[in-house]
Image 1 (cartoon, rainbow, N blue to C red):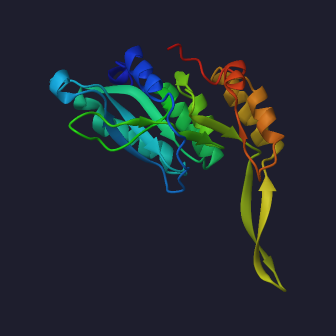
Image 2: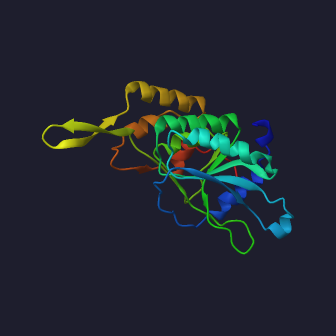
Image 3: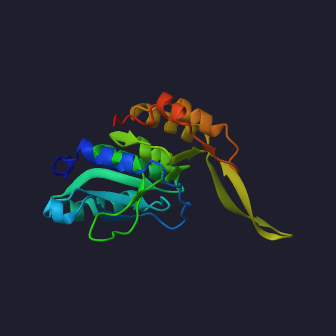
Length: 230
């Protein structure tokens, strides 16, 4: 399947990134990540051969990596699908995000932080800015080529999990716990493996989880999170 899906073109990445210039950043979503095929170009001019990509939108859950692989399996035979994934996600599960990143790398997929609205007037969907926050960044790392065009946003903060604890006086309460050193080390090794500076992970772990740090384009380049040349 991976060999069948390596027919993506640089031109599609450039088209998406350039179309984002000047677009407003959308609000993040909290629903579970879904996948759909989006088409670019005018079908009348493409004669049925308009390039297509996968739009991945929503929160990354434990089911997301397998759902993504299955979606590719079901749609790869279409002929026009390029190995390009457009991400728009508020984050989700860290380990599942790493597994999704590994799936992207195995399939040779490129990723762009972008989203596509409904199709109109017989043409391909309109491209808009997107967000890749929190754990989404770790899925993005896995792509064979990554593009973070302005004004799309990538945001990081310290990993945490909310656990329900029993209190005899007040009943169940939520308690925030943080990632173990083992998980942080594993995530740093994963970043190295994907060609991204593990300084990004260390920086994220130093940021209060009640806020989010939006990476500047300089940070994106310095930490090699974006390696696309448009």
